Image: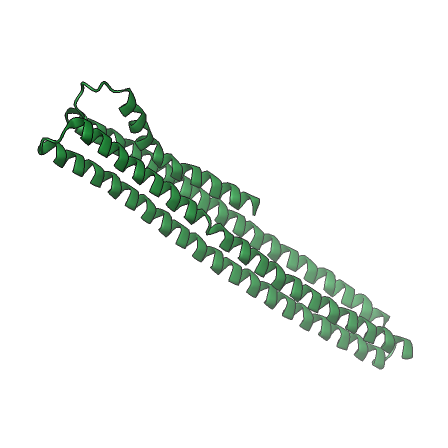
Length: 249
């Protein structure tokens, strides 16, 4: 899960990089001569911010896809290891059964051994079914959480871009209506700052969705631990019964 959190962090940093173009304008605005009318530079400023936003969004989408690919590859590797381990466990278990069968000296002992084998195989099937269910439920919950997060991020970005566009549209209208350039500059700066802060807050709220993953991790862990404990109890009981049967006969 550390890998997942690391990938989430990388994507979050890239999302916040969308703030940079607007922040750059704010710094540039402070350093620009007051004698240069904001109206004469409006198209240039808007175009520069739009281009930087577009470039950063492309990087974000690439990183998103990279993150999803890594998470899917990790999932495939885990499923493959589980399958391989189960095959090995099945092989070892069958070898153990054969040793038990070889030790049975009469029909009663043979029946006791077969009863033990059936109990163990039933317990293995039950354990695997519960573990598989826990894994599937976790997978579905994580997939939904990821989809919800991506949808929320997309909306936050779209709202942010719309706010920037609205700020420039208002500034252009003010320019056309002869509003004092100083007032236009200040209003544009304030509007862009507000858009930037809202976007930052939106992303911070979205990142809280990570807690959903932590809850699902705990639910999966509890379900698996429960299945394992139940399996162990069944095995212990079957072993006691087998031992008693073999000693009596």
